Image 1 (cartoon, helix red, strand yellow):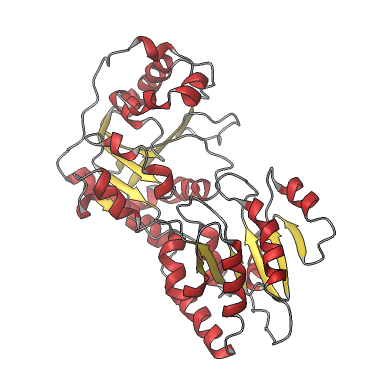
Image 2: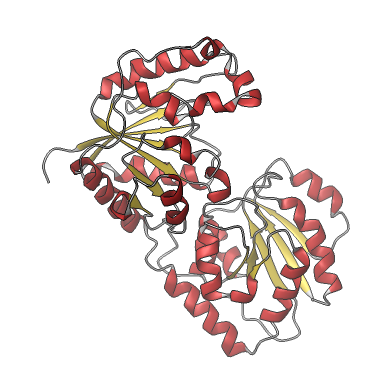
Amino acid sequence: MGAPLPVVHVYQTLQEQGGVETLLSIHRELDEAAGLAPQFRVLFERKPPPVDSRYHNWNFRWYHPLAIIRRDFGRVMARTGGAVVIHHNCWGTPFLAAADASGRRLVFLHGGEHHFKEFLAAHRGYVDGVLSISPLAAGAVSRCLPEIDGERFCAPAAPINPPAVLPARRPWREGEPIVMGYAGRFWHGMKRVDRVVPLVAALRAAGVKFRLELLGDGPYRRVLERRLAGCNEVTFCGWRTQDDYWRTLAGWDGICFFSDSEGGPLTLLEAMAVGTLPFFPRIGGSLGDFYTPQVNEPGYYPAGDVGALARAVRRVFTQDRAAIEARRARAQELVRRHTFEAYERDFAGFVRRIAALPRQSREPVAAPPTRLAHWLPLGFVTRVCLGLVRKP
């Protein structure tokens, strides 16, 4: 295989990032076996990173000026000069590119098109290749970055790790409540779990006999518990791990999502792996947009329309049993390729391919110009003039 290829992962935070955290843990474990020599650079993590010589955490805070951030970033990145540098979610990539000491520069888009379409065009001329968690991002990437052709784009198989022996599904009998679930973080912003409350009302109005299990935790949980107090159909499950997690997913007839913006989510793939049917909003560019129409077209509902979601639940689960089971089998078949090993194989192969292609991104410069605005603190910039981190 030859000498390992140096790779540097640059990202905002390490922990509490859901699917991003999962992917980075895979790189920590599998990059070396795939012939890569990984290093990890964290911009804003306040918690201590793993005790691992491959990590560096700058722990930049709101009061750091942009000029200091780029200076300190460059000093550390100089230690791995010539490596393939991967900017995850590409925070400030045009601004930091001058100091990243890269041999090749990639960006990895973990969010959906709604997240990156506003800033990706500012990366024109700065990247040699683009990775995305969803194959549907290819169209938006080619529009924003015409220089990124099919050879320079990759959507590695997003990884899940179901047990070797899948838990038995709960047999559904006509007349019993339909068991729906939600799995993920209780966030109002991207996840829009506030829509759980009107969904309960919409399911009742549609005449659906149901139970709704909410798996996870987060800052919006207390709000939901207060607003759903006395609602016998809803159960808050908290976090569950390993076998308990997979048994819970297998106990659901369907899993619902409410997001306005999303790249994955990985929980959709995990639910499909045990035959649970996805109900996902039409937000564009995500794995949910890719897979839901293929396995449960009625459940691919207009974003934000919980009434349409409730009607889809009623429609799908009033079909005959054979039709429902055919959808479940199709879901399981489609996600069979989504393994850790397939993900790392796709990722490492793409990185090596980009390293072998001619560089087309702007090369780092030794002393990038510093404008007066670069002495503004980060907290001010991110709230008032975020465009500064999208420029060199």
